[in-house]
Image (cartoon, rainbow, N blue to C red; front, top):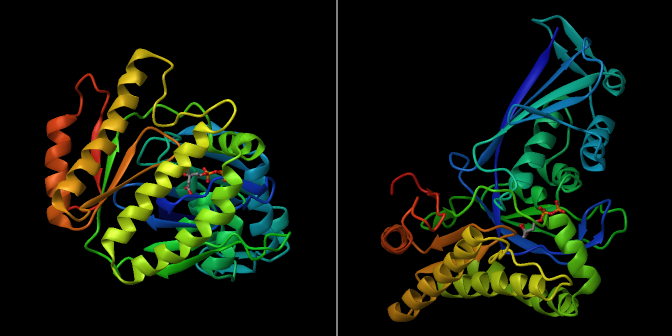
Length: 360
Ligand code: DP6
């Protein structure tokens, strides 16, 4: 027999960024972060997990290709879920699995991203969140999404925030065992549904410096990161929570753009410096980096000319632009500008736009 569960989890985009760990193994952050979870229709991971007495080892396929589960992150997630497994009974199939059986049964996992893997579109976030969620359902884990977020966090820090929709805060926590380092939902997806998210997919290539090694180097070498984590982010978190509660777009936009810019500033303050927005290793990438800076210029100019911000921008550890428009009208105008200045498939290496609202 085979028992299967399929789940779908969207990715999330941080508006106050997580960058830097206080514990590499448990994945504990040096600051709180806040993100918005995208509509699953656009950027999500679909994962099927299966269990059978015929499986003789845990195996996983990502986008159809088998990947190794040897890494500590997968093992940590599997171990934590197995430790919380409960009895499962499927009368129709005549299957009965006890809590103890789970320790000896193996799982097969097939996971698909409907967006580029590791191109800085937080694929690990959706991936680990979906893995943990689907395994928890399969093994009948009786824990809420907050507790599951602490397990997904051990796969990839940003993954803990994908267990909830809407705006989500990852509380860094104080405990050494990470038990209080969990995601908490701030507001659900209906709270601020005028917002429209546009993602300019500049490149589907894998990023050159992974977030994991990039943030390790930053913590070890940047003299700005401590100031960011201890002084700047705590204040921004409070203001951002207020802005979200009050639908205060000007404050939201100012904080989002500043935090993205500061994240890239600490990346440049790292030795060796990390240039996620302007990778200069070959000609096409130089063009691509210039485009990203031009997108910032374009948004800043437009916001100034309107007298009040219409769009916020944020860039993660990869060369794609995420634009958050205050409403559908602003998104339409922004998209027109983007299509005019940065047409897809030109020599700018801009491939496509993904829009977080089907109606545009
Ligand atoms: C820039 O969660 O990918 O997207 O915990 O090492 O897996 P690991 O890192 P990851 O880092 C995400 C960094 C970021 C900011 C954010 O999502 O908060």
